Image 1 (cartoon, rainbow, N blue to C red):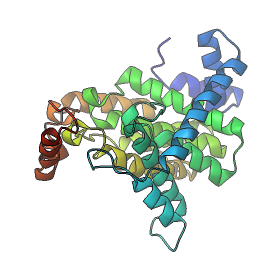
Image 2 (image 1 turned 60 degrees about the vertical axis):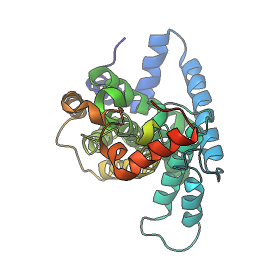
Image 3 (image 1 turned 60 degrees about the horizontal axis):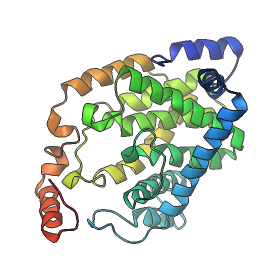
Length: 297
């Protein structure tokens, strides 16, 4: 069954006075022809992997073979624990956790592609941090993850979740939209507020290039996870404050699809444009090729 619109889910949630996560649990149980208990158990296992990737990611201190990443999550987390910060402790913590997962992915750690490996840090970091702030139960966390799943499914059906097809808007933008919806669910927000948060987040990611330096999913990918995780929390807060997206979520996804089709291939994961073609970006590629650290085309 292709899930290509949030509208039926919103209508059902409103009619039955349920949250987005609850509706998605019922939907997944029906699609998989199993019990709600079984699909919840499956999501709990996914959450365990996400938590593990956060825990391992923030421990990393060594730089990667390319020299472009490694140890940044630990630095940011340390900053959150001492003195004043311009962004605030929660923003620093969510950014550190998102970057940690992305660094762990680059070190060949096991992560959950949500929706992709390159954007894998956002959802776990936002869900973990939102749950920490709200002292949420495991049940609320799991519902949040199911709510995020609806957002990802619709984006994949109406557009894409591939950077090579639609640029980074379809990877990190979608992951942040998924995370924003999950955060609202965890705080006890309505289905409408969750989807609205996703719309606010996604429409502010439109047109984002996918331009990995030297073809590696490190620069700007890893730090972008941290930045977008912070924005996802803000989008959730905006929605919970009553701020609404003037463009409905489904239409934002259609716009993302249109923009993705108009984007030149040079900024769709080919490393032929954007940051990958800067002086420093090209220098990294030459260095890695000459050192034999990694074989590059």
